[in-house]
Image 1 (cartoon, rainbow, N blue to C red):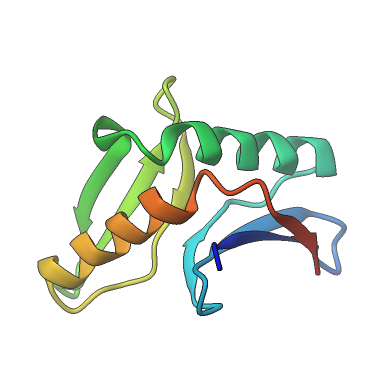
Image 2: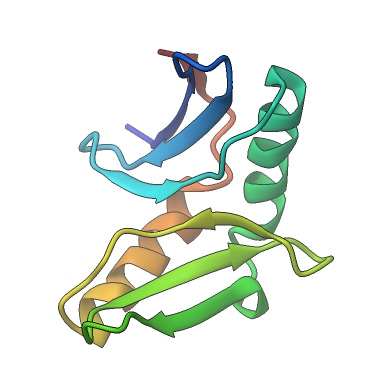
Length: 109
């Protein structure tokens, strides 16, 4: 089973999505979008950019944990990972986004 996107709307009417791996673990989170169409565009950007090594920005949080951003060709962040304890587990997270990101399975929460 492949991963999927879960598109949702919050109580303020904003939309966001998460990319989930086959085990239902969230591996990437989007920003908040004002419209459903914009969120769907964000999903399309993740689908396109996830397989590309150069689209990943490796980051370290102020508390020493590791995470990454996935960026579109224009440099805009289209998704942010969870926090990881080690660089190795962050690399595993990137591999999971690369594998699951191209999924066309979009579900509404």
